[in-house]
Length: 176
Image 1 (cartoon, one colour):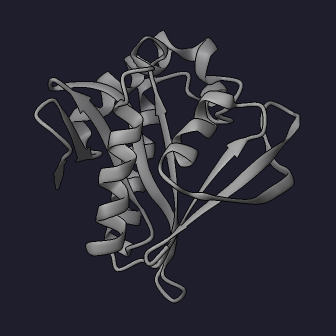
Image 2 (image 1 turned 60 degrees about the vertical axis):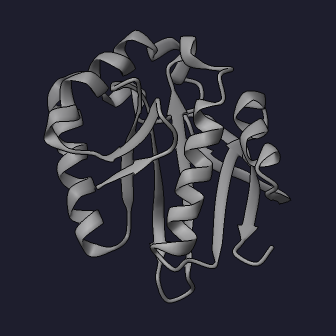
Image 3 (image 1 turned 90 degrees about the vertical axis):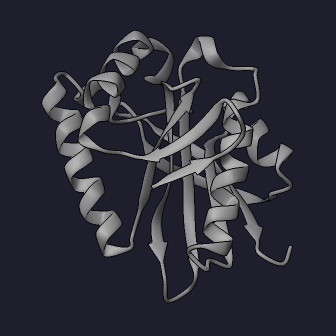
């Protein structure tokens, strides 16, 4: 499945062909991604990404996740997805990351908007959440730019490298 965002940005469901490019992108951006993504230190080989993709494909079949790569001009520049999909309550959580040198061009904001449309119109969700570290200022601009409501702080909501960090909880409703 592919979601076309515009003439240069597309989202593709993660697939085996994305293994090496994802691995390479994370390796190039390890120090940049590490403070906010607890899995970065665990990614020591291509096998880690292969295992992630295999699990993601199964969760996609199960209807609990839709994980995509972000492509700009046919080159993988990051990842985005809707996770923890709860069909009973019609909600899911968006997560994203992008290579450091690719920031500031609106790629993640535009990708999130496309994914939000997918969530509301294809998956039939009613509520979308985004959680960001309270000190991850760049990530916070995404939900704020997209009209999400900041609901509060999840105290010590994520364990990142043996340290609990606080998270802001943002939400967007289908009929906001």
